[in-house]
Length: 392
Image 1 (cartoon, rainbow, N blue to C red):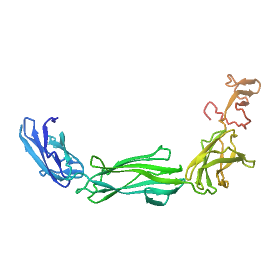
Image 2 (image 1 turned 90 degrees about the vertical axis):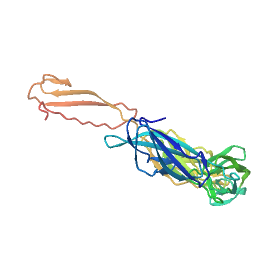
Image 3 (image 1 turned 180 degrees about the horizontal axis):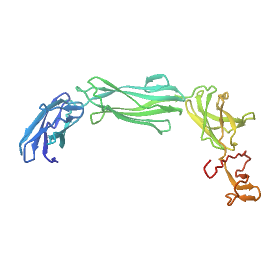
């Protein structure tokens, strides 16, 4: 769509090979009935700024002028955009029209070719070729896939994989492209996703698809990722973490499995009031190394200091009690009322505040009654300030 004063058309090839020099002509027609000072210095070809040589040109009514520039074709399709500007009577430049043209990437001779050159699984500090045998139960896994560009020109690469556990449940789905990077011929690209827990015994599987420049699949792998095996368990270790959601009567106790000893662990807590005896929570859930756990504990007393610590167990036995942490439950919200205010003054008896017609010069004594509106005993205090008619 044309602008108010100008109309842009872009002349460039519809497609090009990687590394080709792409020449761009920006034609700007003057739609106004007089001569305009025009420029096309704001052109872009993706990340390349097109300068178009001349800074500005005077274009007569109805005529067209051209600006020229070029760029080197990258390993992906390019959108060329051009913006026209005119100089107004106030001396400022204003944008008027904008146009775009797509320069597609030509498929190289022989097409796009690529290979999954390496497949590796990292678990804890060990990294081995896939498939991996005898991975100890409870480790944390991370997939590393390497793709190699076997094409004669630089190209973008993409990856898509799905990891499933021994029961067939999806553990991880990963998809990405090298959007900002062209992989040179013979070059490799490493793809790495987040970690996941290897917390089931048996065979994990993976399906991998290697992609290049819009080609659905250039290489693939479908098969075993690793086999997770049981190891002789040893007693676990746990740490205590701070309680959360602390209220007047409950809190969530926190802990972490520092080392599961080779298999998933149950956990529990013990707690006590300062100077009192311990109470114990029930064993719950199953956690592995590095995982946090929390347990709700109720029937606590308000405004009370408690101490607690965590413990874990597996088939080899119970861990030692972890570090002890303290916290104080919240106190109840204070509630009280001023229920009566009386003024005692000589010669006239007592009066309910505010009192009217008190004789001048008498001495007075103020009496205030406060009521505890809470369900527990609380100390009470009072503060008042009496001012005379002058505010003193």
